[in-house]
Figure 1 (spheres, helix red, strand yellow):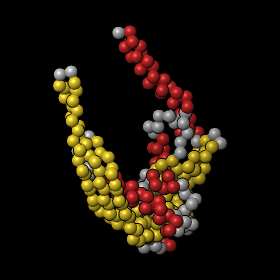
Figure 2 (cartoon, rainbow, N blue to C red):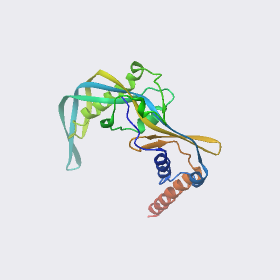
Figure 3 (cartoon, rainbow, N blue to C red):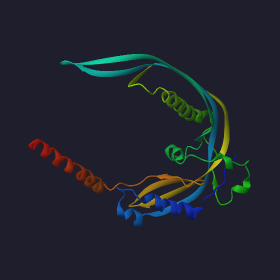
Figure 4 (cartoon, rainbow, N blue to C red):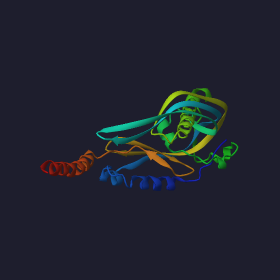
Length: 242
């Protein structure tokens, strides 16, 4: 499969500029002085995994109530045997198959809309780089498995509400990986440079979702903490004088 680019280079540059806005600790000079050293549209190799998951768990639920009897506070705790089970289906969970691409960046620019997936054709490639995977489906499967496992566990835990406390007794989660699709997905890679340091950004070439590395102005961070701590100290001093 291949997922064609929807956003061009101008859109990537504009999105990068918008990304700077609202970053409280970004050095003021960074916006005006950093320059884009390189920008390239890349079809990044991804493995898209299908799977089925079955989950079963047993928990101890507790609800506690307290009331006063004379000079004593009495707490009553009810204990519950909580059992849950369910299943989940996953379709095309993406994991990049290129060791050159930072996994954190590739994960952060999700999701992609697979409704636009096309059968692979070289007609989509002119003007873009196209990487070939150097990590095969078996090598990448563990990352996909872990994501599906955690998602299934979270969904199971979400059904155990209604108790003041919940304690797991046993859990059994099985993820059966059924198929891996190979696809090239569109990513804009932007390299900027400022004060002899390189900063890498990645943008989803379909949706415009962007993530990247930014410098931090330590003086602005210190000023922010000072602005928070001084009022707290003043309140504390006032309370001590009461």
